[in-house]
Length: 164
Image (cartoon, rainbow, N blue to C red):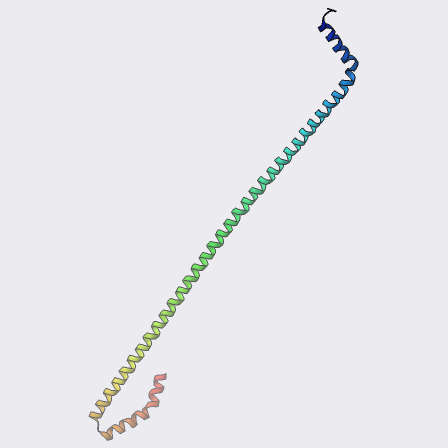
């Protein structure tokens, strides 16, 4: 066993670590500890970032829901306003139509009254012409003058009776 190279290699390996182990192990342990600390810090940072991301997601979700609620309210308000405007416009159109219809009826009535007045005036003229012809044929010149004078005297009484 003392003559084998593997034995001496193992002995030298153990002696090397016994003599230099503390000097090698301390920096190696410090390096591993610092790496473990960095990993822990990175994990803590990742957890913090994840919490922040979850909070931001919750905030964004809340804001989106609030925006949807506001949008629905705005749409509903716009719909109601449009309905009110349509109703107001319909009422105004109906009122305008009624006014135009009333104006047309008034014009028709005025035209009817004018036509009736013209017909009456023509009838009166025709009656006067007919009465004149009858009176001239039936009454002589002197009696016609007497009838005219009597009609002129009776005119104020006839006008006052007609006015009452």
